[in-house]
Length: 515
Ligand SMILES: [Zn+2]
Image 1 (tube, rainbow, N blue to C red):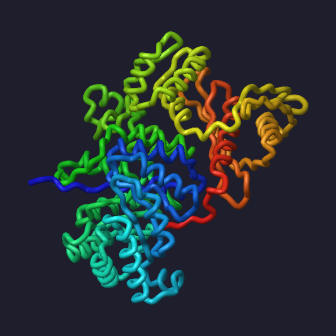
Image 2: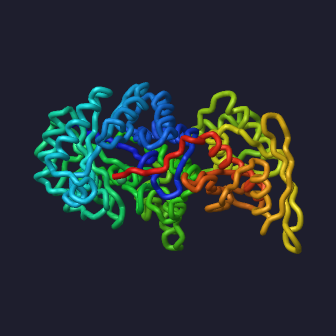
Image 3: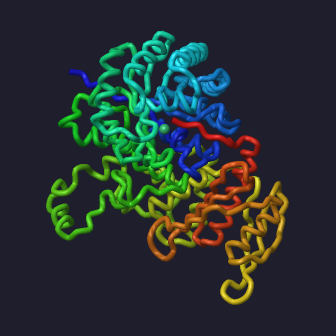
């Protein structure tokens, strides 16, 4: 019997971006989309084109770049949204419009203030209009989890007739138990048969998003919507890596199903998303958490040493986690060794990016004896995802940190001009950021500041993530900085956020739409 493929619909760039504070710049989104394509996701939901010019722009660039995954934009069931979605994905090789309207009594009555028949009419009109742009149209019954099954069948009939090819049943509020999702999906999939693919989109408010997705697959769903690291609104979405590895590890039960995911790309994808969003998975997170493959107890360690399978149900290599990090680079490593290492880590850089990263590697190698995989990963990610360098740090001078008034003098390059200024602050970091504000003439408000060591040891690289609000009406901007010196990394992170802000000016969204 041939295996059935479960389509993996990744919404990290849309629902995941709605995680509080996870807004990304266009370069970062393109980088993530390329990695998702390499991971093998079937559909990349690249954003919500009508939300803002920035979203539109990012979707359009992703559509131009991605070749093998379908590129999708979300759209409310209104013409303006659908038109924006259709235009943003126009150049994609494979494209889909995903339109939605709420179908639960509570949403129809209080949010939409529409009767069920008006909702059906709006849904049908939306699908028909979307068909003018693409063949592949997904329709979502927002809050399907709390909708009447009879109504879900009725609206499915209507939208399929209008041309929808996928029907998505989101548990928008994360309320349902696995047996309830199983029942809903079975009812709809046996009803619609091969007229459409049934999909689910589960939220994790009760910690059941993955369990609900698996229950859906067992009952006829052939597409699951999910995100890397389980990012998403509130408690997040079903985590892609958990669903995929559950199907793989339990091949004894799910042997009839397969996915197009290359599981060895799971870990690199998870690291990329964590470093870009600044949101680290909890250490005990299944599959990709820092401790997911760590054996602390002596009894367990003993067992694993004697025979791995005593306590391990899957291998770290299965998700692309390289535990055997023996090939360490250093000062004397040449360009070829560096390039070889990048290839092993799964990075393909064009010559320009390779040269830039190699330069940074040499500077780092002068200061740091051993350079580990995580250092390289951080270096490359930092290089590839940074916004255009409008401002660039030249040097940093700091004075008096413990007694007296901390002050900073900062030299920054802009259009080949060097600008120098100085300021005092409540602390050293504050003094640095205030000086940068003086130079840029923009007042940034620091919302979050995180510092993390990339690898181990006293000479470890410091990775600093800041969230800065330059305009109260718009979302805070994330900036990253990497250096062996935490203060330099902090200055770079702040300048990174500033560059992102300037490159996205006027393109930021002020509203969020979800389901
Ligand atoms: Zn959602």
